[in-house]
Image 1 (cartoon, rainbow over the protein chains, first blue to last red):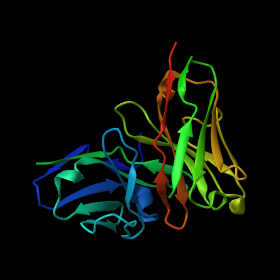
Image 2: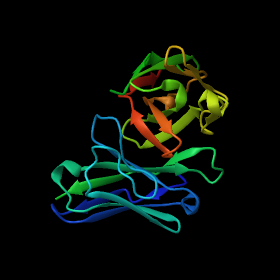
Image 3: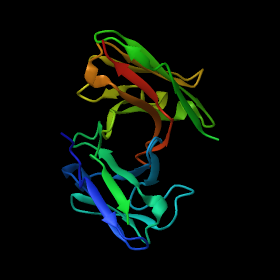
Length: 108
Length: 121
């Protein structure tokens, strides 16, 4: 079983704001990174660290963290944002990495 | 332009071995940890393991599910990372992605397109 827990599915109306969460004890110590994966494609890094976006990632994507929960927020969701989203962090030992189970985002 | 190209996937019988490769270009390969992540059909991402850069000892870490069966190595002169998979099981069937791990970001900065490994008799 994954040490990082995500809701399996979340939906959002077009243009609205959605938050995808990731829970785990290791998140009290380490930041999560977030990945977007569309069908048939490789994952793409969208958020890392406290709240950093790689070049080319729109600023409607943001990250935050509180206690054992990390969040990915999409402000003004677009149809193109429909995808699976995965969080990732170190495990409690700090030497291994772990992914959350993934959240399927549907944009209505 | 950063590129990671996996190769070597295919159909293999349970109990047999297979080696997949990841050829990198567009960045200083030797400066980064290289990781393997897999995704079983219709399932989520699973970290397999990584190899640190030589600057950090070139040591490896593995997920419990593959430890003792899988080995990650690297050839910095060729910018290639390898995943040697022994004693394969049907549950190892997955797309295997390589990704470079930026320790400054604590994130997988770039991913290859993956290679499919099917373990079946």
